[in-house]
Image (cartoon, rainbow over all chains, first blue to last red; front, side, top):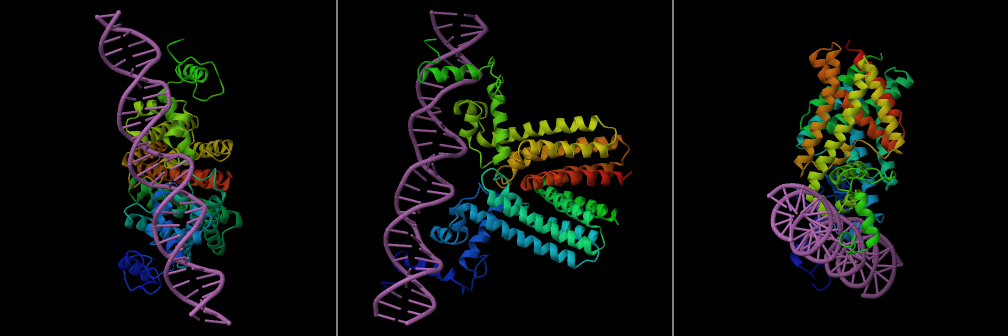
Length: 220
Length: 220
DNA sequence: ACCCCTCTAGAACGAACGCTCTATCTAGCG
DNA sequence: CGCTAGATAGAGCGTTCGTTCTAGAGGGGT
């Protein structure tokens, strides 16, 4: 009893410690069964997606992730900025995966873009209009004083554009058309998602999907 | 002279007081010669445009506006949220004015939208990529806990869409086409501006302008 | 001369901020 | 069993946050 896990508030500390290790059987908590570092990244991503960079505190993150402040700074010695950049990369990977699936599953790029817009709308509605673009939400307002965050955001957009561009290239579009269309596809979805979020209405995203499909078709 | 302005740090207080009244002759300070309330609104708008809602402090606003905390809370008893909503309305009016001029000055709506995109790009570059959309920057991240701010943002977008829609209607477009095109015009410009800001490159906005013009033309 | 109302002025409050620091626990290894 | 490095734990630092509060200045109206 004297050595492990019983020196302060025994029962609570002990149970949380097992929970923070890999083999927890509980189901309700998202991120259960993950390593501490991963739980911190996911909590940061989700919170900053909803509250922005400045609106999210490190202590809130550590609480949400069921990690302690010590763990947060152990894994992310760069502090809040490093945490935010990592969260952006997490959101980057998630959306890229969704985009890749949508593009690979459909032969027609216009139809694929339309489907992506519908998927984004469905996800946004499912979150009760709270989960917008994590990259935008996290990086907005940090332009002046956090170059690392801006770079992570730019890399995310660039990756997404690359996926769309490659699909268009594979469908026989010209190099410049494909590159420019990829820009507008991503930018329009971005803007439409924000408008949909503010208006609590998925229509802007659905309109955007149709218009982007029409624009793509006009280049055939 | 003995009564007004000599009870603490005389010389500085005296000069600032005259500056905070209407008849200051200096030219360097933006907002000089304006009423206190208007100076506060403009300072709020500019700061939140660059730093977001959470990233901007009331004390910073009062300093930037050359007003005191007492004045800020005198004019805006609703505190930071009321201030932000007012700043959004200020940005709303400014962009609406620019949009109105661009649309009125050109008979062709596609050309007008292209010109708007170019204007936005020029302004963004002129600010060294710091001044993005004030409405987006101010309202992002407040969805959960500030309905007044969200409403002001939605009203701004709606007004801008209305201007574009009316232009299209006046040019003979169908009612539904005009309404939906207006949505995408505003949303695409929004998204492209943010991407341009992050990438420090005006190309996304120029591409957006060309694509929007093409999309509009496709509905003739 | 007086009052009254608008506006200015900034000290002060409790809470929260990002971050540092020391101490302890755990796992793996000899 | 002891040692060490990785990971956890959270009190506490100085600062800043949004807001409240009291006090006073300025300028008509009577």
